[in-house]
Length: 164
Image (cartoon, rainbow, N blue to C red; front, side, top):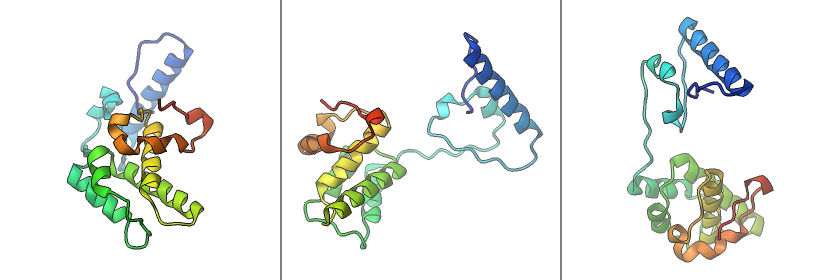
Protein backbone atom coordinates (compact mmCIF):
# COMPACT_ATOMS: atom_id res chain seq x y z
CA UNK A 1 0.00 0.00 0.00
CA UNK A 2 2.83 2.40 0.85
CA UNK A 3 5.27 0.79 -1.55
CA UNK A 4 7.86 2.60 -3.61
CA UNK A 5 6.66 4.21 -6.78
CA UNK A 6 8.17 2.69 -9.87
CA UNK A 7 8.75 3.32 -13.53
CA UNK A 8 5.48 2.96 -15.41
CA UNK A 9 5.58 -0.10 -17.65
CA UNK A 10 1.87 -0.92 -17.81
CA UNK A 11 -1.54 0.17 -16.52
CA UNK A 12 -1.01 -1.55 -13.17
CA UNK A 13 2.17 0.45 -12.51
CA UNK A 14 0.38 3.68 -13.41
CA UNK A 15 -2.54 2.82 -11.11
CA UNK A 16 -0.20 1.88 -8.24
CA UNK A 17 1.68 5.17 -8.61
CA UNK A 18 -1.60 7.11 -8.64
CA UNK A 19 -2.63 5.35 -5.42
CA UNK A 20 0.66 6.23 -3.73
CA UNK A 21 0.36 9.86 -4.83
CA UNK A 22 -3.20 9.98 -3.49
CA UNK A 23 -2.14 8.58 -0.11
CA UNK A 24 0.71 11.10 0.09
CA UNK A 25 -1.78 13.90 -0.56
CA UNK A 26 -4.17 12.59 2.10
CA UNK A 27 -1.36 12.34 4.66
CA UNK A 28 -0.38 15.95 3.99
CA UNK A 29 -3.93 17.16 4.66
CA UNK A 30 -4.72 14.92 7.64
CA UNK A 31 -4.33 16.65 11.01
CA UNK A 32 -4.59 13.63 13.26
CA UNK A 33 -2.36 10.81 14.40
CA UNK A 34 -1.51 8.09 11.88
CA UNK A 35 -0.02 4.79 12.99
CA UNK A 36 1.51 2.56 10.33
CA UNK A 37 3.07 -0.86 10.79
CA UNK A 38 5.11 -2.97 8.40
CA UNK A 39 7.60 -5.76 8.37
CA UNK A 40 8.89 -4.50 5.02
CA UNK A 41 10.20 -1.07 5.99
CA UNK A 42 12.76 -1.06 3.17
CA UNK A 43 9.90 -1.10 0.66
CA UNK A 44 8.27 2.11 1.92
CA UNK A 45 8.35 4.97 -0.54
CA UNK A 46 10.91 7.65 0.42
CA UNK A 47 8.24 10.35 0.23
CA UNK A 48 6.24 8.50 2.91
CA UNK A 49 9.32 8.10 5.08
CA UNK A 50 9.95 11.85 4.97
CA UNK A 51 6.43 12.50 6.25
CA UNK A 52 6.85 10.29 9.33
CA UNK A 53 7.74 12.22 12.48
CA UNK A 54 8.62 9.16 14.53
CA UNK A 55 9.56 5.64 13.54
CA UNK A 56 9.97 2.81 15.99
CA UNK A 57 11.97 -0.25 15.02
CA UNK A 58 11.07 -3.56 16.62
CA UNK A 59 14.01 -5.85 15.89
CA UNK A 60 13.64 -9.60 15.99
CA UNK A 61 14.08 -10.91 19.51
CA UNK A 62 17.42 -12.26 20.70
CA UNK A 63 17.85 -15.94 21.54
CA UNK A 64 17.19 -15.18 25.22
CA UNK A 65 14.08 -13.16 24.34
CA UNK A 66 12.83 -15.95 22.07
CA UNK A 67 13.25 -18.44 24.90
CA UNK A 68 11.23 -16.18 27.20
CA UNK A 69 8.53 -15.88 24.51
CA UNK A 70 8.31 -19.66 24.06
CA UNK A 71 8.07 -20.11 27.85
CA UNK A 72 5.45 -17.37 28.22
CA UNK A 73 3.31 -18.52 25.30
CA UNK A 74 3.36 -22.12 26.51
CA UNK A 75 2.25 -20.90 29.91
CA UNK A 76 0.89 -22.94 32.81
CA UNK A 77 -2.51 -23.52 31.16
CA UNK A 78 -1.05 -25.32 28.12
CA UNK A 79 -0.31 -29.00 28.81
CA UNK A 80 3.19 -29.71 27.46
CA UNK A 81 4.90 -33.10 27.05
CA UNK A 82 8.35 -33.85 28.45
CA UNK A 83 9.95 -34.00 24.98
CA UNK A 84 9.44 -30.25 24.36
CA UNK A 85 12.84 -28.56 24.03
CA UNK A 86 12.34 -24.81 24.24
CA UNK A 87 16.10 -24.18 24.19
CA UNK A 88 16.27 -25.87 20.79
CA UNK A 89 13.35 -23.80 19.47
CA UNK A 90 14.89 -20.54 20.72
CA UNK A 91 18.31 -21.39 19.29
CA UNK A 92 17.29 -22.90 15.97
CA UNK A 93 14.62 -20.48 14.77
CA UNK A 94 15.13 -16.71 14.59
CA UNK A 95 11.47 -15.78 14.64
CA UNK A 96 9.57 -12.64 15.60
CA UNK A 97 7.27 -12.76 18.60
CA UNK A 98 4.07 -12.89 16.55
CA UNK A 99 5.44 -15.75 14.49
CA UNK A 100 6.32 -17.69 17.63
CA UNK A 101 2.79 -17.08 18.89
CA UNK A 102 1.31 -18.41 15.65
CA UNK A 103 3.49 -21.53 15.86
CA UNK A 104 2.33 -22.13 19.44
CA UNK A 105 -1.33 -21.70 18.47
CA UNK A 106 -0.91 -24.20 15.62
CA UNK A 107 0.80 -26.63 18.00
CA UNK A 108 -1.99 -26.25 20.56
CA UNK A 109 -4.63 -26.99 17.90
CA UNK A 110 -2.72 -30.06 16.69
CA UNK A 111 -2.43 -31.34 20.27
CA UNK A 112 -6.08 -30.63 21.09
CA UNK A 113 -7.18 -32.39 17.90
CA UNK A 114 -5.14 -35.44 18.96
CA UNK A 115 -6.44 -35.22 22.55
CA UNK A 116 -3.00 -34.99 24.18
CA UNK A 117 -0.48 -32.43 25.50
CA UNK A 118 1.62 -30.37 23.09
CA UNK A 119 4.59 -32.43 21.94
CA UNK A 120 7.75 -31.20 20.26
CA UNK A 121 6.54 -32.44 16.86
CA UNK A 122 3.50 -30.13 17.16
CA UNK A 123 5.74 -27.13 17.78
CA UNK A 124 8.02 -28.10 14.89
CA UNK A 125 4.99 -28.39 12.61
CA UNK A 126 3.84 -24.97 13.81
CA UNK A 127 7.25 -23.47 13.03
CA UNK A 128 7.32 -25.16 9.61
CA UNK A 129 3.90 -23.73 8.81
CA UNK A 130 5.14 -20.26 9.74
CA UNK A 131 8.25 -20.74 7.60
CA UNK A 132 6.01 -21.55 4.66
CA UNK A 133 3.82 -18.49 5.26
CA UNK A 134 6.98 -16.36 5.30
CA UNK A 135 8.17 -17.96 2.07
CA UNK A 136 11.15 -19.54 3.83
CA UNK A 137 12.44 -22.98 2.97
CA UNK A 138 12.26 -25.69 5.59
CA UNK A 139 15.88 -26.82 5.61
CA UNK A 140 17.24 -29.84 7.42
CA UNK A 141 20.06 -27.64 8.73
CA UNK A 142 17.46 -25.56 10.63
CA UNK A 143 15.13 -28.33 11.79
CA UNK A 144 17.93 -30.88 12.42
CA UNK A 145 16.69 -33.98 14.25
CA UNK A 146 13.08 -32.79 13.86
CA UNK A 147 13.18 -32.41 10.08
CA UNK A 148 11.38 -35.71 9.53
CA UNK A 149 8.13 -34.47 11.16
CA UNK A 150 7.54 -31.43 8.96
CA UNK A 151 6.23 -33.35 5.94
CA UNK A 152 2.88 -33.71 7.63
CA UNK A 153 2.24 -29.98 8.07
CA UNK A 154 -1.25 -29.17 6.88
CA UNK A 155 -1.26 -26.17 4.57
CA UNK A 156 -3.62 -24.92 1.90
CA UNK A 157 -2.58 -26.18 -1.56
CA UNK A 158 -1.75 -22.66 -2.73
CA UNK A 159 0.68 -22.29 0.19
CA UNK A 160 2.32 -25.68 -0.25
CA UNK A 161 6.08 -25.51 -0.68
CA UNK A 162 8.13 -28.66 -1.26
CA UNK A 163 10.41 -29.32 1.69
CA UNK A 164 12.83 -31.75 0.02
